[in-house]
Length: 379
Image (cartoon, rainbow, N blue to C red; front, side, top):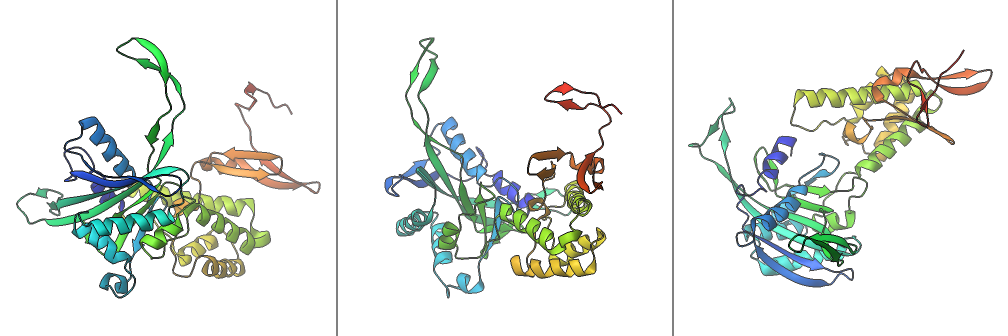
């Protein structure tokens, strides 16, 4: 799915936009026991309550593609029913609009078996039927044209956390009193949309998986629910890329080379954003090695990087530049000092060896402060 397709489905989860009439779910305690099952009507709930439910569901479709939102691909054998029953279970939930009670119970059992959250949590399931409007090439909506019906299920898994007792204002009494600790539903930690909404239609070969923490993909859950490969977590991609870069370039891994790589990645991200291209920006091995060559890395070192890329990521893997670089900071670190620089001003930093001693030099022309005190640099 691309950004426009995700945004189109996310907009469905607002008052008056979706066909979601009820939410099915269960409340699970820290012992992995189901405390309660529920089938709550949104149409009979108050507007404020319904909006809070919908806001939780929308959060399951938020974040960056390739980082928080991850494409899941099912094999042909899974879709055909010749391999495993994970896809068949999701189809049973979808085709029954969550009315298939044995399928619901089986899904809850599989999820609870593998969810690795501490404490209590909610598993929420909804089903939406969307008459996808047709848009002409000029972008005009054609209401009289035939539309495709996209039926999907959305799952949100939300921690339930206890608040602390505190003083609170009671409006009708115009006084402050103690409010007891209570259980509150937090933003979803994980979830998914099935099937994927690809080319503005149902893609039974795909799902869109959500994880709030980019460093943790909850692979136990994804393997049990999808039994399909998922990419390395975004944080692990960044760490692995940095390790490969340092070890394969060796002595050629200078400050200037790393800065040049950062600048090229940031430039690609900026250009992609300004182009409003809906498809996610990704780089394959060939593109990354070409970028290194452009940064002045020798052919021998580029080949070493390519070999490590194949070994650690896989030759067919594509990576999102957003997962590889911090666009907001350029950080230089040694054991006792950490320096953060605006990535657009990397030209202010250089490394040099003076009288046999290695230095990091920063050009400081004005506005130099130490612990908030403006200081002067004298010759």
